[in-house]
Length: 79
Image (cartoon, rainbow, N blue to C red):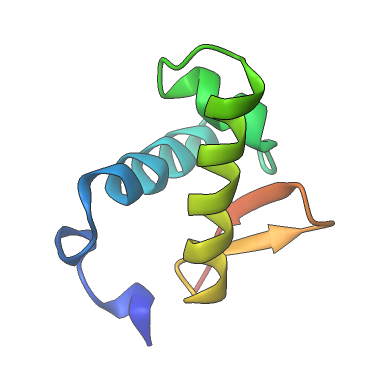
């Protein structure tokens, strides 16, 4: 199962999303949207950047690294 693996096996863009999600989870922001993730990554809140983050987050969710909620919110998997 992927969460057992270290995030070092992921490409840098995916590692940053995981890192932001872990930080947001620690700060009690349970389910940020792709726009929130993009802004936390220091990206402009423009549709192209947001969609890029959403696409990567969806791939992480499909592979079991994070959880996807209501198609637009993402959270870290809990053991």
